[in-house]
Amino acid sequence: MSDTTSSASRASQILSRPVTLGGLTVPNRIVMAPMTRMFSPGGIPGEDVVSYYSRRAAAGVGLIVTEGTYVGHDSAGSSNRVPRFHGEEQLAGWAKVAEGVHAAGGTIVPQLWHIGMVREQGQGPFTEAPAVGPSGLRLGADQATGRAMDQVDLDAVIGAFAQAAADAERIGFDGVELHGAHGYLLDQFLWSGTNRRTDAYGGDPVARTRFAAEIVAAVRAAVSPDFPVIFRYSQWKQQAYDARLAETPEELEAILAPLTAAGVDVFHASTRRYWLPEFDGSDLNLAGWTKKITGKPVITVGSVGLDGEFLSAFAGQGSSLRGLDDLLDRMEAEEFDMVAVGRALLQDPQWAAKVLAGRFDELTAYNAESLKTLS
Image (cartoon, rainbow, N blue to C red; front, side, top):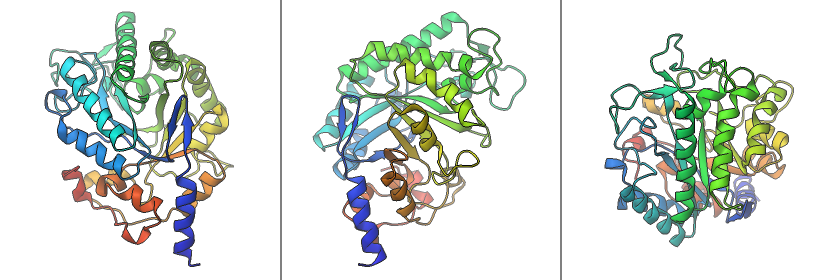
């Protein structure tokens, strides 16, 4: 048996196993990573969005995490073309997306999103809304350019996430993912670089986790007990790629423990390259450490099947193919449970089907031009 044939057989065997997340059984270990598209004028996902996700589900993606969708808070977003997860027309559009994915044999969760201080004053979809965050600080800034959130703001955002989660269950989704990564609002509270608060929501890592944990608890209370709640987080931030929430496993545990206690069922640990170890003295990546600390199912992500990280794509750079053997070794050792794939699925809607069937010779390298079509 050739090395290629052996790898193909392993990929099929390891990735095709079902996995249980709360009350949801996902047919295999492949996840479609959330990727912002800006293809929903008025925040309404149309038939093209139904087709976009349904094609990936029909081709074998086990779990789809949608692009980020704004929760029902006026300061949540910055574009009228990014889908929203509130409003009658918007939710009706999303119901069709969920129906289409289910008809194609897949499962799907919306990623619920508030961008916080990434927003600039005057941006849509609600141009009069202020930019808000834990301390009114943009990434890398020492002077506030927005408003530090007061208790009224905090309660409103918590309620918006809870309502969106309840709506997701009502219209037929299989769970929800809370976007706590990449320097957006929840992450702005988690990271000391943007959270300078001196009240109960700022200070040490546990205090900085309080807001996210309260959102998780509110979401958990708003949905059925077996409805999966996924929490995505990262060390790195947009424009601060070397930022870290935790320098040690002990610091990471201080952040993850309150989230676990609040009701997270699954963690989605976002890294730029999944094969890099997270802390000195161990080969475990961030997902591996997350599973070791929490005992929860974990999704890994970061340049899967490619040799370059995704931010280079926005500078027009493509990526050549990277083998999956090290990923399969880690999954076989149960370092993590699922793997999220972004650019490879963007380039080729059939990527999962080809990998699960061992058709490695049909995989193609990522071409940055695909960012312009997002078919």
